[in-house]
Length: 286
Image 1 (spheres, rainbow, N blue to C red):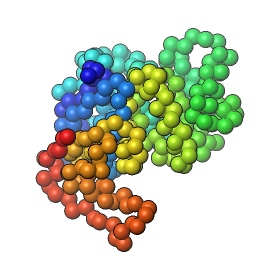
Image 2: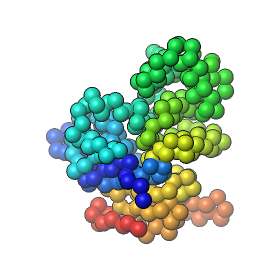
Image 3: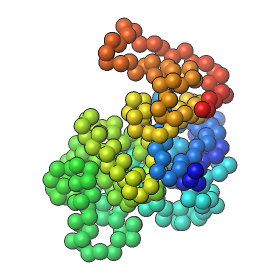
């Protein structure tokens, strides 16, 4: 079995409330990603999925109070690494597709200007024409029509789905060893979503990239990922092979599955989760 590509052990993240009391957002999370593995993280909004991914890249908000027993990437101790060294990894060896392009893309720079910065951070020293060709090719790889025109557009001139594909093109173009995809298909229709997943799949096969796929779409995670971690209240309450998610045993996971009814013969009434305080302390792993 290959050695872990990335490893999180005992991650805690908290934020101070209005009264100054720390409110935990991530509680003792431990996860491992291996080369070429697709790890899905699912759970309701606010369960700590995105914060867990951001912690690996050092992208937690300044106001976050966090600690971890261990954060490792390719054998390197990220906790002991100087900030400058860690920044060199971001956008090259590690990348993250953020969820909302409206807040992730610079509104006063064209797509080409922003993507040129990405290539420069990767150490590309080619001329402007060659870099331009790389930019257009990266946009075409995520099935953007008239990529040359889109390259010269500003973010506000793009639809939500188009902006999301630009974000994916920027992150995938580096061929990172670890890619954290935070709801990468949430703004895309079904056909384009399948095309984008094919791009991610190709990158994983070509570079042996480890993928952390954060999503609310349980059927998609079951079909696309290798392993799934289910988060509730900032904790990982259950982990299992993606193909076994339909047979999950934790009552929270069963509740999530029940809230996603089949198109054929759907129930007359959706079930409601009856939350149990024990979910904040119990975990299931198979």
